[in-house]
Image 1 (cartoon, rainbow, N blue to C red):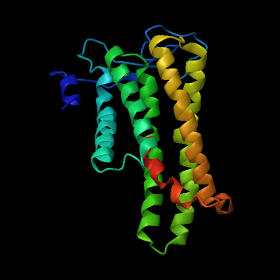
Image 2: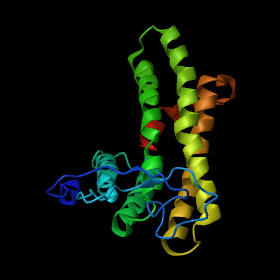
Image 3: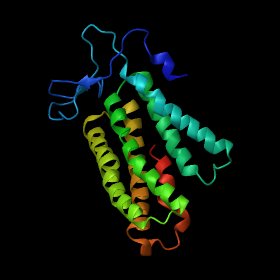
Length: 220
């Protein structure tokens, strides 16, 4: 229901790559230095009725709201408190982006984590089903590690560097930077669990009940 209110009645377009040098207002209302010319992304606007880029954000925000309510209504709040903390951070960040229309490229970049979730889900299903397929689990283990780095660690590192270097440390910029730093800590914590569980099981030290399977929901 929420995303439906953003859709204009006429033709719409998704953001397209810009031919310019610096990152445009899709990043921020103030264009940062030209040295940061990565990911130039702007909304199309050559006379057609453009679809506001922030209209893509209520979909992930709606997921976080739904998943949070699911955890609460199923009385899993105590065991899943860290997911609720993450979801609260994500919801507040997406809502601020929707309201202000700033840092939209950053939001789209963070949604790349969904690619990594495919392999985290496969891993979880293989462990839950007890299917005797060690070769499949072994192959997915290495693919999962690569995808985790490409679609979680790399985008998160780039965004953290960008915000710390170019974004004002006040108001919404300070709020989003704080969110990014907290997410960095969560991602690294769950990455360490993934490494211990799949590559260094001898280091788990009785942490079997805190496996990384639930991490699929952390950065969804």
